[in-house]
Amino acid sequence: MNGPHDLGGQHGLGPIAPEKDEPYFHADWEKRALGITLSCGAFGAWTIDESRHARESLPPATYLAASYYEIWTRALETLLKRHGFVTQAELDVGQMLEKGREPKRVLKADMVAGVLAKGGPCDRPVQTPPRFVVGETVRTKNFHPDTHTRLPRYARAKTGVVEAVQGSFVFPDDNAHGRGENPQWVYTVVFDGGEIWGEGADPTLTVSIDAWESYLERV
Amino acid sequence: MAEHHHGHEDDHGHHEHDNRFTDMEARVKALETVLTEKGLIDPAAIDAIVETYETKVGPRNGARVVAKAWSDADFASWLKRDATAAIASLGFTGRQGEHMRAVFNAPDTHNLVVCTLCSCYPWAVLGLPPVWYKAPPYRSRAVIDPRGVLAEFGLELPAEKKVRVWDSTAELRYIVVPERPDGTEGFGEEELAALVTRDAMIGTGLALSPEAAR
Image (cartoon, rainbow over all chains, first blue to last red; front, side):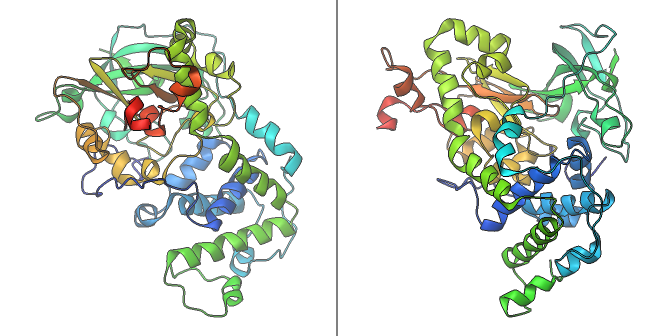
């Protein structure tokens, strides 16, 4: 999706402004937003890919003006409504109006350490050997789906070199939309700065992405 | 942000909500209340998550990984080959550290990590990311103007040093192993770890010299 999240190479977004001795949270609501988001993720009702798509689907003006935990919160509201756990009316009044759907699992305090330690590994075996080999020159595809993808716009239709085969992983472009995990090989592909940014690019720069196999074609 | 109104605004005794903090406070409180009433979340679990990331999982985990790599060549080569397993051997596993990759700075190359698409970050070794890592300026510029970005962190690289930017577009999470500072011969792992900053492990900084750490 060519959404507001796909920021690589955009100009005019201002200075970085690192904060000295930055706290983990800048407000108490951010702590709750983190905990609520992770707790609801534990329902098992949606995937990380679907939640990323919910975030990148926010209107660009909202996305770019929001702090990160605000983006998380707004996307979480979308997911909770989409999957039948809450209604907009409930969010409007801030109380339960109907029971709603039951999740597979509710994260209780005594489960937190185990769930966080386990994480959500997304490597999956595939039956076919990798189509590309280390050292091979490849070209990224030129596509502009309005659905989720992890191929950034700046790295489309570019020629680079396969530096590593990283293993096989769940394919987000399908998994975000309920089409299954459909794992594919993932490759680290390295591009020269000049291939991506053209005239005036930093001659010492290389940029790499981790690309699913179906993002790539032979040159 | 004024387009959303919640019943909870009344709790604050007024209806003016023209700053984001107050609006988000109300919004998140409404969400937590609804979910708690439905039995979908456990507020004590939220406390436990927050406590984990405030006190247990943070950049010191990563600093221990780097210090061990500096002092133990076998560990360094394991880290290069299979960072997930090498890091797990120190007990650092879990959410946003499921699949790890370590990249090593060298005299001719400096590594910098970004996620241009969201905020992918190695939570298991660095904890929660800072605001700037998740914000548009860093995400947009790190891939096109890394030297300009580094300059804003006070880091001027020699012109001949190559810059290698890793855009974390899949589920691999990166940790940069900075170069070991001079004058640290004979340092133990603990002393070495004290020189490893969070920014050095993202690539927006270098490891501290022993003098600077004092």
